[in-house]
Image 1: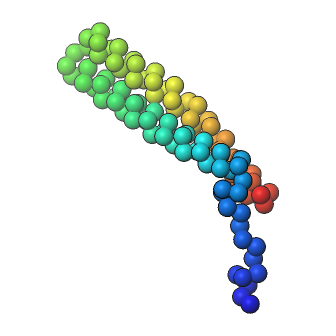
Image 2: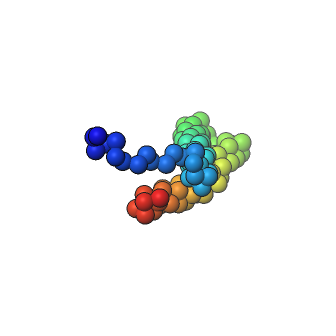
Image 3: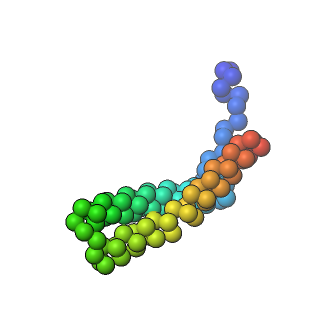
Length: 96
């Protein structure tokens, strides 16, 4: 019998509802991160276009709206992402 056969099988993610929920939160956090950074990029591009073409009230509103939307998405998603990673790390350290 090989040493690998003597190991107990690792629990699957589906077996633990807490870890399954954490994985779901991690996926939503990743989507919010990508969307937030994309909106930040759009805001920067709009700002550069506004500098080149000339600022108008509509352009200033568009830049402001995309910045606010990106910050609304990024702030919580970054914090929750770190929390999910810390919880996973804690589970691994305690053998759960």
